[in-house]
Image (cartoon, rainbow, N blue to C red; front, side, top):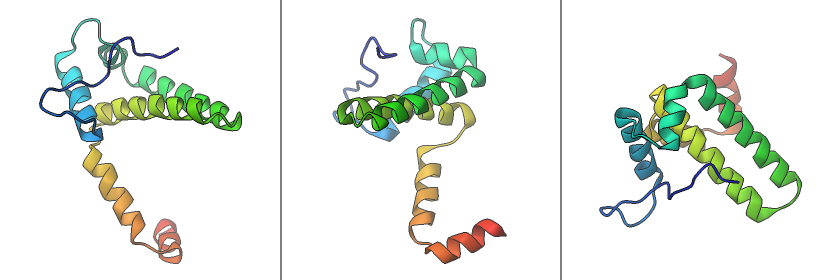
Length: 119
């Protein structure tokens, strides 16, 4: 079963899905806390509930991948990505923050990265 009973992301301005669009939607939910929203529920319950959901979704990804079920793995990765983005909003971490971190890792070779991590 999914946590979602209605579409997560709909925008007349943006016809295609984007991570930034989802992030903005989640941030708006945190600011306005619309009644009946699953995202509102998570923000109202706080960091412990959000972290619990991230952990649960990680486990579900592992189980689906171990079963070699591609469709289920994709489904569970999407759930995990959503909950991680809720965590990001809660923690004040932006999509840009994560993109910058990934970009910094992309240009560092393995030996240099190891040296950076041990300092």
